Length: 74
Figure 1 (tube, rainbow, N blue to C red):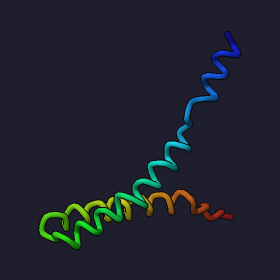
Figure 2 (spheres, helix red, strand yellow; figure 1 turned 90 degrees about the vertical axis):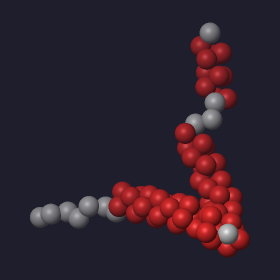
Figure 3 (spheres, helix red, strand yellow; figure 1 turned 180 degrees about the vertical axis):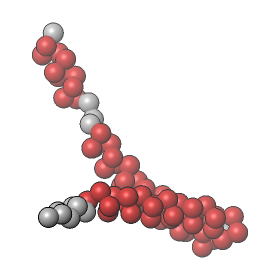
Figure 4 (cartoon, one colour; figure 1 turned 60 degrees about the vertical axis):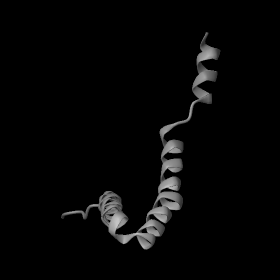
């Protein structure tokens, strides 16, 4: 029983692996597609492209703030 459960857990994808896949899809497929579609038809895809760009920029800022180490106060 224990061995079976452990084997099942080993076969499951963890959150880090899922995140890597999603980031890869966003950066290499979605962003490239949106840029191309915006060039093809700015009227239709321009707002969507700018919205996604802003969301990505906002999320990148949040990540940068998390990575900064707080200054020590003496």
